[in-house]
Image (cartoon, rainbow, N blue to C red; front, side, top):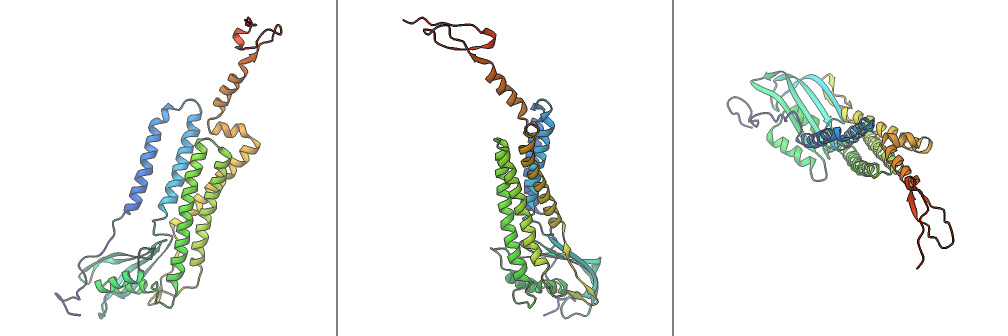
Length: 326
């Protein structure tokens, strides 16, 4: 390598990601727009069913937004370590940095932040993503990082997940991430079906689909759990070791799955033991009362003779109506 202005020719500027992922922004914007629309029409809901209707809307949108968003999050497993380490290859200069590892379903993010940020005449603030999704080649991304001249700590951590690494972490996390992502897409489909069934309304089968959504979300955690608990190669920076633990997306998925499980069981139990309360929650009690009034407001008139035809008349105008036979 040749010197350029007294330093090695690293690519100019750190690849610091935008603080808010664009995929999250699109998903959250869509669901917030739907929520705003439902809030606008909320005054049109009459009676005490307005609160139940609003709670159903908020809960349904929350579950859908979570199931869709966690597909693109990168904090299923996270870890940080502070260490004094070399910053560049072929250089003895040491820097004090915070190194972060964030593992998602589609790849890993490696963060490098200096303490302070400006050291060795450079701004140390990196956030690099290495993908292993179906349409991405992890080894190719790692090779591009070598060509760019990424800092040594980032390359050291990224190398642990390459296919050529003896750690075999690439295969474990990649397969587990693909299966977890597949089950979450299925959970999103069952969530949509449950929303349709509750709107029709077919409450019992809607509860079944909500239970299936919960089961799929919990299965996705099981797939990721298998990769998390397999033996890993240590990631050492001198005496400091980078260790990871379950991140926010893992716990959010677990909480949402348990919420769907409780709601599905509640719908099924109420449907079998207290159907009137379940219909009250879904604003079906008034409709049922109107149907009963309609059914009871008409009774057959008693025939006066064999030559009289029986007609249906309202209770308020109950009388015998005869038809003269021609």
